[in-house]
Length: 270
Image (cartoon, rainbow, N blue to C red; front, side, top):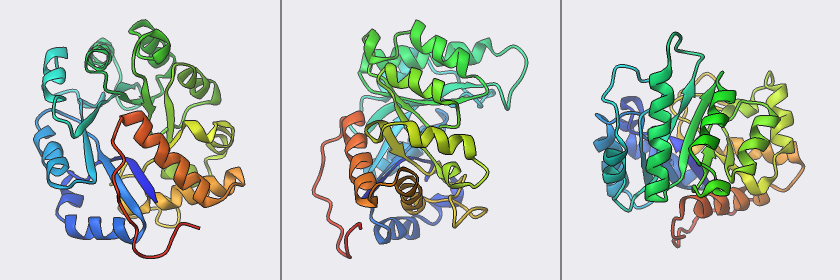
């Protein structure tokens, strides 16, 4: 079985197709998904999905790209994360690719999320793009990692260097690969994925974005996460069942989710 560790199925283009989305997950042996929050106004939709479906989990947080949106406080994130289906804080982090100028507000927002993670003992979902140096620095300064008393988390949709991955892993973080890793042009990322130990890897779709090969260019959805696993298995020259099992175990371990008795009725992962 597979788990999509990062998706946005509350976004309208997927939410309006929810029965189909869930059916395709089942068809592709995707037993669970984590619906990730990007801002506070839409958080109730994220939580509602997690409350309605036993195999859907959720996070609470404000994405670094969202400039004109209510700013979260530590206390607010702590309060909103109290529901047992909220298993993580984020997504949070830094993005210097899409936004420019004085981004101190973005760095302060990141610090707020890390502090909420330390209080709640719920892991972080970190987004970083063109900002890896500051991302790692702030993670260290705020004690995000297990080496400094934090609970760590995951570097989602990872596209950075092996050095960045190793720095995050040293702090107890997992590295999550999305459909980008299946792109032929992502040669440097292929090398990173090959080097990162399977014991520290998660798989995700980041849907509705970044559909993996063979669906590249189409709207992404959680059922497609199996293709990320397939590519990683070929890249690492290990059985697909090994990738499926290890990334599933990693998800349950990181997010402290009690493993339930989900059964896949048709066939088995080969």
